[in-house]
Image 1 (tube, rainbow, N blue to C red):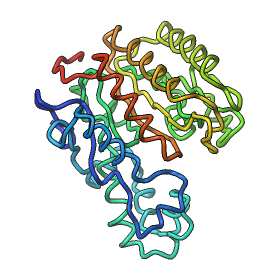
Image 2: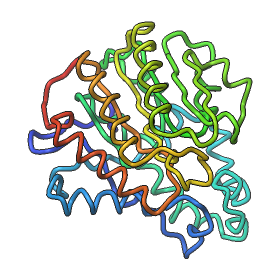
Image 3: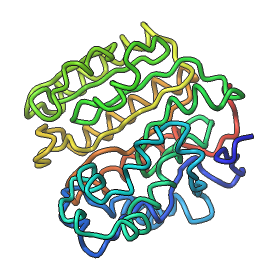
Image 4: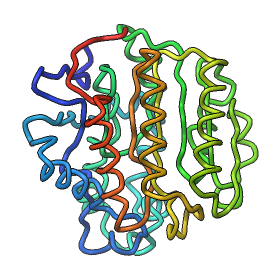
Amino acid sequence: MHTLYLNITKEQLPIIYRKEYNVKFCGLEKLHPFDTKKYGHIFKILTDSGMISHKTVVVPNEAKNEHLLLVHKKKYLKSLKCSFKVAKIAEIAPLILVPNCLIQKAYLRPMRSDKFSFRVLIYYQPFNLGFRLVVRFWLVNLPWIEVQKVMIVDLDAHQGNGYEADFKGNDNIYIMDVYNKWIYPKDIRARQAIKKNVPIDYNTSDELYLKTIKKNFLEALSEFKPNIIIYNAGTDIPAGDRLGGLSVSEQGIISRDEFIFHQAISRKIPIVMLTSGGYQKKTARIIANSILNLYELGLINNSQEYYF
């Protein structure tokens, strides 16, 4: 069995978290609009609520170079030894001046836990408090897991052009992407990979947003029968998020997540939720409240039942 694969105990919930998800790098993390301690804030809220504890969450293993090479080219990994390259990817210009050895220790190594973490649980409703999408790793390198058809439901405000470019022309991957059509990245070429393309306008609010999500998700499920759903639950859609440009309320996000989970679980389709983008201080609270709602409704539990 692969060294990154983990089984969970009966006491654990399918929630994956490591403290390393929270980036601390001499204050430079404050130069990026993303709340780099968001995942720690979510963990604290869920812990304070009594839903989880350090004993009931799953701590993923750290990915080694041999694992990273399963989904990345050697040339790309080698390029990360250049501070300029890392600064460009992270969109934090001052990193150019930081010795790469420090970047490796404080910034890149913690991401090794994030990189492969979400896929370790093959139960009904695994969560990850970090974000990386490694569907290719599943399809190619975990043959004992019968994942042949994957549906990606991307509800982040931005088009998911990165993985779309990776999976272009792959009939085993069905992508539904709902995004603000007026903001970055506007990648027309990558859109060719989207099976359910749903561009929306600036300031779209609850009623129209939820109506659009429900209609298109139900259509997607009728068009494609996945073995698993990867749900990119973006929280950069509330009013006030200057990068997302939408106007969905906290209750709208909670209702959205509830609908997606209900539809998946009622069809006995395993679902992985990624907590994705969200650039406001209130984002952690919104995510935590949505997870608590799913837990209270019984849509998250520690069931050991497999569906593979």
